[in-house]
Amino acid sequence: MRKIALFGPPATGKSTLARWLAAELGHPHTDLDDLLFTPAGPLPLEEFRRQAAEVTQDDAWVVEGNFSKLADVVWHRADVLVWLDFPLPLIVYRIVRRSLRQLLGREDSAQARRLTWSRAFFSRRSLLRTAIRKYRTNRPRYARQVAETADLGVTVIRLGSPREVQRWRREVKGPMESRSVGATRHTTGP
Image (cartoon, rainbow, N blue to C red; front, side, top):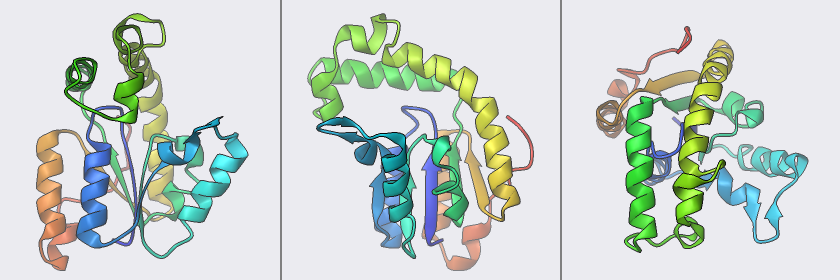
């Protein structure tokens, strides 16, 4: 595995898994959010696409982010596409837990410093409401796009729980022959 794209809803552990993969394999890691969100505000789509394409021109990389609109410059260039497809109740629980830790000052990050109770839970565009809405609307579209990506020869690994993530991590750490064990090629919808 030299080129790995990783995506999934919020609070599924994308960043943790992407950083681990990058360290384990010795590949550079890019979080697409870090490209998109600049101090001056979000990049225009064309500039965002250009920068993402630049990152994925290298021989080895780990790229994480929920930007299926970049499928042609990220997913389609990958050797492996990892989809963290956890159930909605688990995602909701993790978002609530993480938001509470951030709001209570137990976690320091750029997001935590900007978070308010309203942004986390109560506004129409709160993290929680947005995650639920996007889960319901994006998941069927992701399934179609993932199938298209698999049709291009990209290996798709769909992990449906933290336990599956841990099992796959052990396989990645294992000998090269066992790395393909458990990798499932995506051919159907959600």
